[in-house]
Amino acid sequence: MTERETPPTGSRPRVLSVAGTDPTGGAGIQADLKSFAAHGAYGMAVVTALLAQNTHGVRDVLVPDAAFLRAQLDAVSDDVTVDAVKIGMLATAAVADEVGDWLARHRPPFVVLDPVMVATSGDRLLDDDAVAAVRRLLAVADVVTPNLPELAVLADEPVARTWPEAVQQATRLASAAGVAVLVKGGHLPGVESPDALVEGGRVVELPGARVASTSTHGTGCSLSAALAALRPRRPDWASAARDAKRWLGGAIAAGEALRVGSGHGPVDHFHHAPALGLPVFTDEVGGILAAACAASLEQPFVRGLADGGLPWDAFVEQLHQDALYLTAYSRVLARASTLAPSAEAQEFFARGAHSCLAVERSLHETYLARASVRPSSPPSAVTRAYVDHLAAVAAHGSYAEVVAAVLPCYWVYAEVGVTLLAQADAVPGHPYRDWVATYGSAPFTEHAAHACRLADAAAQHVDPATRERMIAAFDASCRHEVAFFGQVAVVATDPGRQVAALAVR
Ligand SMILES: Nc1ncnc2c1ncn2[C@@H]1O[C@H](COP(=O)(O)OP(=O)(O)OP(=O)(O)O)[C@@H](O)[C@H]1O
Ligand SMILES: Cc1ncc(COP(=O)(O)O)c(N)n1
Image (cartoon, rainbow, N blue to C red):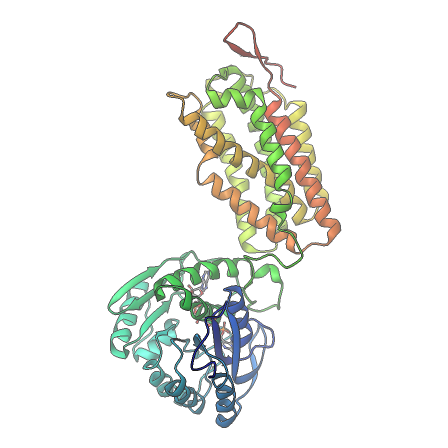
């Protein structure tokens, strides 16, 4: 009995790419195989066309004859049970028809058709007279994944200019061709890059933020491959499409840091996974973080915040130091933005630098405006030491070191904030709840998670000596965080009453 007759349930779906090649690894079969692997599938590939291309464009195309294509397809299906297939570049009508013949004989349970027509570079990847053959394949596909120009060609209509127009056009194509349509909005202008799955008259919108990046070569290939890899383990196409799109957004954001080519670069298919043999940075420093959080929670200032018994003067004194710290911290975040290897990281730290100044201003306008503290009182020795440490790393360190040094301010505050918020919520009328909630709830905890991801990504690309310096910078910042929380002495003078020693250390 052959494997074809009784397909064993393997540990991974066996997924086939039928597509062209890209020797720079960003699009076509090379991208599909990475996308399959990133989604835990076993990848296979049948080559429809050999391309000499890079991140700037296509230089040459060689299309093997139809008999050889058939030999490749049969070599796979004579031996292996294919759980899903993704069809990409078809180049000619003869190739498209040959693939159609094979599907008629060996149709796998899930068929994704990416109707590749024109590359990002503007090069044509499908003969004009092959469009009819691709249209014929719609009848045997489960899902087709056109971009807006491809949708217009398949629907034989003008290119949609707005997203609602595109969804309507996809709906017409889906009902006329009897196929689900995953229409992609990557070519639209604006801050969103929406997709939508139109299936059986139902539209599932898949919203997504547009990532400011030129690393969009192979996004369509990678998305359709992810869809094919996920579908055998998902209940429906919508659920597979949702996960594939979320993953692709991260892959685009991490693409620039790969530094592959000087044109439209590839996406980072493995942005979510650490390389084998290298621990994830935030896992490696997790113990340092945990110790810093535990020590912070022991500081009298933090304990007073937790139970609400902190004297107002102590709170104001700490906030004054906080405001001084934030002004300096903002400059260090701006440095991280300057050194950032990707537009996404650049934007994250630039926004962080801006919000520090906004928070600093609001402290003066709210809590500090009601206080008797002299606005000109200088930074404490503790604040100065922390700021000097950050400034030194910013002046002499690489991007990865600066990110490691600024991380504890996000991460410790988020961890301590979450614990404090739970405690504050248990105290009716807690006087500091609003301030605690700033750090203990989203969006601050999401910013902290984002900063952790950027530190992990940065640590992936550094030599061992730089990684050591990252850990040292992180460790030093954690110690400064604890000292910062401990700098306002909170002393009890009367039983049951605490007062602040206004002279900070
Ligand atoms: N700058 C971006 N930020 C976020 N998502 C994007 C961006 N550009 C494209 N996408 C997403 O990438 C996928 C591919 O979209 P696009 O409309 O560019 O298809 P395509 O033209 O077939 O892709 P390719 O560039 O590989 O040919 C879609 O999920 C789309 O929403
Ligand atoms: C083999 C092959 N298949 C598809 C594309 C389209 O991808 P992109 O539009 O991102 O260049 C490509 N360039 N090469």
